[in-house]
Image 1 (cartoon, rainbow, N blue to C red):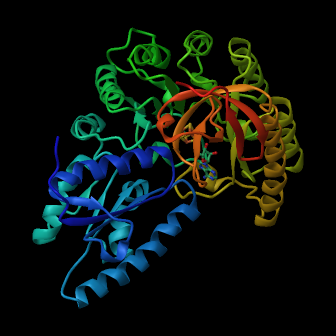
Image 2: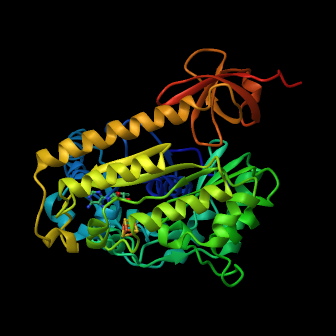
Length: 451
Ligand code: 5AD
Ligand code: SF4
């Protein structure tokens, strides 16, 4: 689909997870036929969209402070005789729709994650009569069908949302309330979107879902789940790398583990959050697994794919977490050996069961635990990277490096790799000899100059 030359400026700020990154790109796509072109300067934007995250209190508060700044920009525009439309999207919009309008009256419209396809209409309405301003219904299929068709990827890697929502109800988490029930896109629609991406030069897709390994889309053989979807996408010509995130240990079934052994396109990297290494805390978190069952699961995954890089999420200072519980988390981390991880201080989210639990942990204790946990993860990440030195890794070149003549790509294990290489190798997967490693990246040389 060809869009008109941009006549209006659109500024989108994205908070939170990769699903929001995907959604922001889709919003830009759906608004481009209306003449909106992206700008990175909010002051001159005709439409500002904040795509928000509700997962921790800090993320939510950032949105309100940003809205304060955007309001001033809007007032300046109005003083110049122009105007600006302010839209709040994402999970804060879903969870606090009315509250946002009350706290920041400069906001013109609020749109929840399932209603982005209605954005053009909502904007038109906001422009016209300040009519219907709230769109926060739950019908993901309509959203995807309306949004995927216009997709124009900008690079050689792309996100592709295949699943949304969560039925796990971890006691700390707002996602089951903001993103709704687990829902999977039909396999056919996903395949069509993936083919379109591959035809436009995308070599790697990351399949996204809050519980991506709970994928159970129509069109997939009964019981086939995510493994069958990956198998289907791996057959698409040009699509050489497939990743997926985020997974829950409970949904890591035998077929998906086998897929890691059998499908060369499925990259050896798995983000599998455990949150804590203490069974007492895991139970209070309603995680439906123990430290031991997680360890056994990782063993089975490593038996299928010995070199797989494991990453995770951790929460420190969950209510009732004692020193011994935290030590159990550290010893689990030592036993697993992570390639990377995200870690957070527990944040009390109104409406979730954990918010009302006794034994809330003092902020200084959380700080100290987070610091120790992150130091351990950093050591493991450095060690994981250092172990690649001397190896030959296939690198997908994604973008020019900071220095001229340099390209940056990704190893199969998702590490950034800096290489002196000609621009024509952008978008290609090329063997690279890894020469050195730092905590956040690798450096290497081309194995041989391809013809
Ligand atoms: N406090 C801190 N971290 C949280 N996460 C989810 N909810 C909270 C919360 N209330 C973390 C979990 C999850 C990641 C996406 O965010 O580790 O895996
Ligand atoms: Fe939140 Fe747990 Fe669902 Fe992940 S599995 S989105 S942490 S409720």
